[in-house]
Image 1 (cartoon, one colour):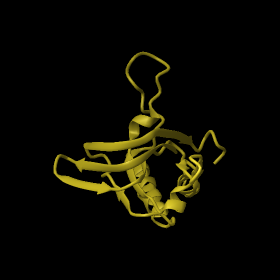
Image 2: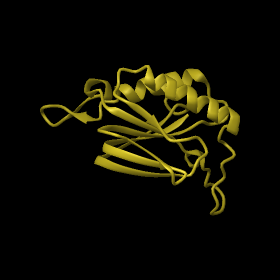
Image 3: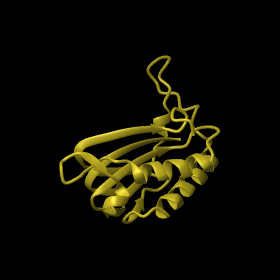
Image 4: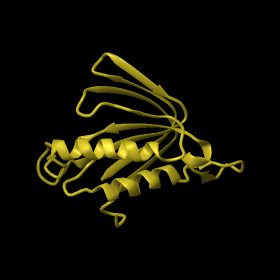
Length: 151
């Protein structure tokens, strides 16, 4: 699984031009399930994101986690994170999980994030067109790939 995690002061997401959801300070997670990904990887990633020390402590050092702050989380599915750009100019998304597997893992990951001691967890909608308005804090952006970190 791949995730781009952005520290935020707040976020608002509009789904299919109709429904709007919002969250406060915490993280935005853009998530992509890759071919062969498992629930074990989703478990690992949810814990890793909840425990990432990317928030400043009283001394201004990034030493606090989402769980320390009880921060909010927005999870958005994002197939484009699987893009292979080795050839040509058009992204190849062939390494992403098939839609049914990706949706199942996306939903499972959301469930695992909700089990973490964090604030509210809001979501986008799988395969919908979304506008995401993130107020980045820092900016601080971390890329996690369970293939590269051994899970």
